Length: 242
Ligand SMILES: [Zn+2]
Ligand SMILES: [Zn+2]
Image (tube, rainbow, N blue to C red):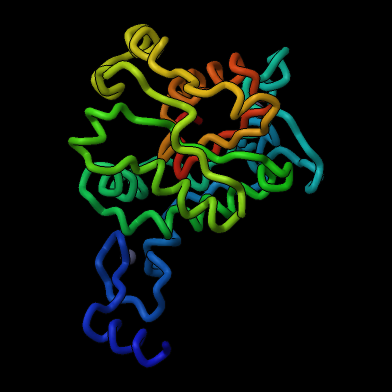
């Protein structure tokens, strides 16, 4: 095994996903690029995962909740987490993974998400599922990037993957082409639960590559809750809404 790994690495040395520099270990990013990624770490809101500013003196280990989460009477998500900020340093990782067939990014991103999701795994969820894409867009893009992340995360956590229960049944206009009100309208009724008995009383982890406004995850969570899910968690590689 060691010999073959060395042999393959000589032919096709692992390269940094961002800058292309040859790496000695197959770990996705070179040290320079890794250090530039704005990973989200504690202190953060225990519920929504929003980082707190460093001036706030918070007892580590305690479950602090941010102001906007405290206002929510019936929170949609029990816990939300993201591995890093969606900014100039991380943007290309996500965009290439999503639109440029860089499917091999999935393992690195899933490893980062696995670390970021520790509070979610501690709650022993029953199912892990991707934000679905419509089958016509799936044909064009050939893979659902979130489903690929689910595949890796399901193996790492041992949580059952479900790719079929949550469906996207209208070919909605890509959200990036819309703004505000139009985005929300476009998304309403876009998702449905195909088999409510599969999620009734279950703790479900929703997976997406990036959270920009949160509206897609919100709509998914709403239909899952309506169909009887007990608790919903959301885990994304990147988030933009801070
Ligand atoms: Zn690099
Ligand atoms: Zn919060």
